Amino acid sequence: MTVATANYRHMTARFNGKCADCARFLPAGAEIIYNFDVRKAYCADVEDCWHATQERKAAPVVVTAPEAPAIVATSAISKGYYTVALEDGSHVTIRIRPHWEADKAEAGAMVAGYLTGSNNESDYAGFAFIERGSVKVWGKFRTGYDRIKLALGVLVGDESARKAAGAAYAIESGNCYRCNRLLTVESSIAAGLGPDCAGKVGL
Figure 1 (tube, one colour):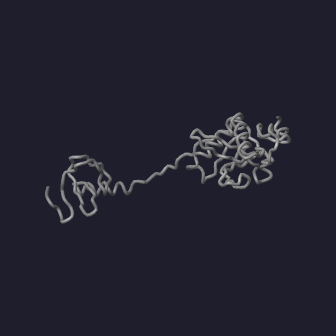
Figure 2 (cartoon, rainbow, N blue to C red):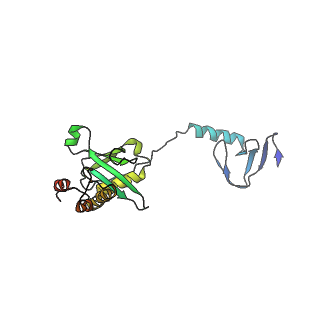
Figure 3 (cartoon, one colour):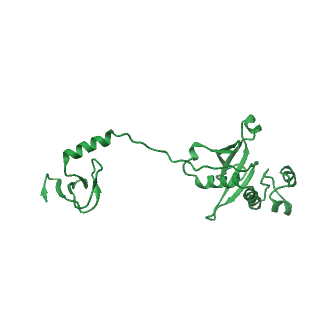
């Protein structure tokens, strides 16, 4: 081992690593130049490393955004409040309501929101559109937010699971899962729907 400068040394690499300049792989046992000030290793062949560094800097960097998990709507969903139990024991409450634009609402478009606070009537944040049999998650929610997207996937994918989620909301809140009005009759609480809403959904 010989000293190249006051801060650099030519030496043999003890571990696998990469050059701090050109990012080339430096296996254990390779000849390297080590900077003790910044504790970084460099290629021993300075000229070859310089060319490799220029090639790396000139190469375009391609970043691929992660794909949002697709949510497939296989059954029609009506407006209402649903509490979906997840496999980890937690639950997510989702509100489905008509689109705020009248023409889209008339065409059957819905907006999905998830409960963000303690008020189960108003503390909801919208995150997706449901229209023409498809679910369109809003941009902000395409990365992360897996729990709410999983819950929505359950609701739009399985009618029996959706009814169970509605009943779970009714039992937890004491309100009809369709109109969110207080339920006072035991049979209505068990069904999750008041008599008027039950008639509207054909029960």
